[in-house]
Length: 309
Length: 104
Image (cartoon, rainbow over all chains, first blue to last red; front, side, top):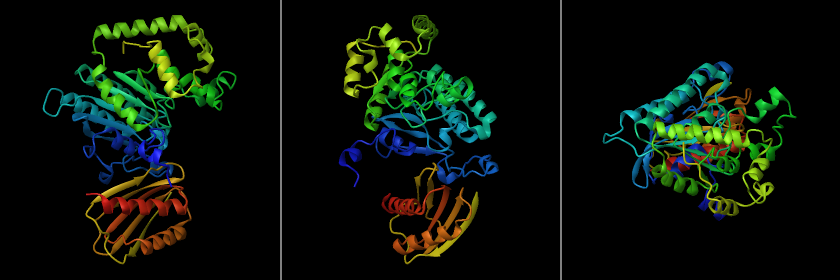
């Protein structure tokens, strides 16, 4: 039997991309575009003798959140590491462009929810994947320029790595859980290139201490920290849709300023507890160990906020 | 990868009116199944694309067992498998028909 508590509040980390969408949107409102039965699949994986997925690991569509229309994109991190590839990338870019085109019309949406769960570009179709990432960045900024916030939700198994890390950083607001990770170069890649002395990818505590949700929200790589259940992500998505900053030159200048200050304050630190100590946290070593309630209390006590985005 | 089609006859058409459903994910040791109510009467068609070669006999046994336990007449099952064990395949098949039966 599945414990009652798990049935009642499913975990974001454990859920599939489809189940995350179901839990995030108002009941029965999701309308998928290019659903599985259309069989728009990767033309490349067969050459590598690999089974494709009916949705190529990305689900896109429209629905409602608290009665207001939203567009939604969800990557399935368990299929090929949630990778950006030709078909999956085209689905993401296509939806973002459609959102921009429909801004201010009756089909306009209140926000785009981007459920990232990706290791980055799919190596079997790397050129198409790299193009997909850059086209996604451009299309995403187009959506923001049209006045529509793009909210990133990060808490899946694959995290948001490679191009996924770059795309996350371009969003209006980033929501993350303890399990969520954001970075560009993944731990294994750093270890392969620089050695285990530089970064031991098997040291899970180290990986989460550097790339994990708590570090990201403390440093401003993410804006909202949530407990790891689907309902908490839903509440944060609804809240942050209204809290997103305008996409203006002033915001960009403030963001640049914020990042420069962060680099000059902490650029020489070797690990995150050093940063927390310098930032004045009372017990820096305990940050990864306290429970979610205590961590949320720490965030609100210290009024940790990073406005520009 | 190996692809093949298994055909069977069920005792009865699958109850309910849902047209299509999808279950599972093409993760390691897992599979996805797209179910479509596209066959006539009691016909059952199972299209398999699997990363594991040489297990057709096992697939046929799993499907035969499933068709006996359930009554999935009129349904086409399209499977993308990434090395799932037979018990996982049975579980997903049963999940799939349950979903198709109960959805509006």
